[in-house]
Image (cartoon, rainbow, N blue to C red; front, side):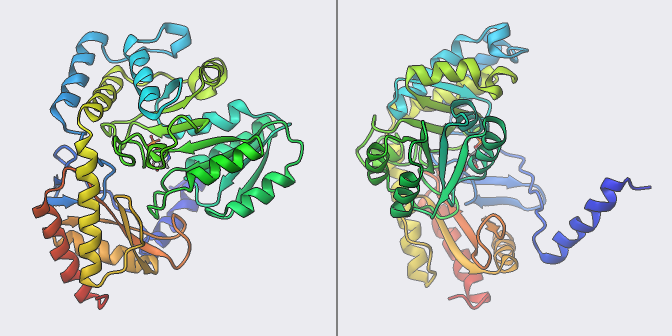
Length: 399
Ligand SMILES: Cc1ncc(COP(=O)(O)O)c(C=O)c1O
């Protein structure tokens, strides 16, 4: 007999299947990489992972995790301020701050948690937070939570529209703290936030600028230092949040990078910090090794950029119209959700893993397949994937 809850959710699950929006999990039996072993599919080319620098299976990154397991064991077995914090966390936090160009940083078990902590911890009922319309779900939920908990005000500005933001900041009048939050790179579009303009506007209004650089850390800028390096403004962003679960080894974890005072305050007050365990030491060590690898091998970032621009140019040459951009996120808009899922299924049959995204992850009618390029891809990987795109594109009458 199903419970009332199951009676409610089972028809919804059935509806997802009918609508073609049901998400089936693909199981991998190999490490993440340019090519992976997918259960029941064999080897497939991976164009759907955030392993931008190909570090998730880099030998020094894996070895660092193993050594940390031997040295520190599995974990702290409680929250940091209660039971102690490992020296590897301190080393990681120094490296994160150094990488993105702030005085300090504080790690969290995910960037979701890091984002969740920022407005809820730092704002009060006298304050205001303004968010870009296309910000990541973790920022949207962080603001919902902050509004409920701290009673701060919230507002949303049109995506990338600095005059709308200017108007909203002006309307905020004498709010004590004004916080503006934006993604550095918008994950569904691959668009880059107009950081120099945002910095100028925030200075004009004495607002705090927070940039979620999860898709830019390790990706943008000559040395992979993120959106600020891309625009030559390292050190000028008040707060940067980012993930350790993408370019920096891909395991898990996130951080808030900011002034020493802000990080100290977060250590004192951030609820995901005070009431949840620290990153496992294996993960902290692998992330630290990833940052050290990146610092020693900036050429990985160059390879990533060259691979992304090659793939984008070739797609255009085939007759596809990917969204314009300069990041390794290359979306091809298809319209309806079912069309995106169908293309993704056909590509998978050709041995290429590209996820289709539909509403509500992206706006209605703008469903897409999103290619993500890695420095780990060889030209042979990319050419094989492009051959699959040509075949499937013709089959679907797209090119
Ligand atoms: C822009 C952005 N912020 C935050 C996150 C959350 O990252 P994490 O997996 O570390 O929680 C993601 C992950 O998809 C993201 O794309």
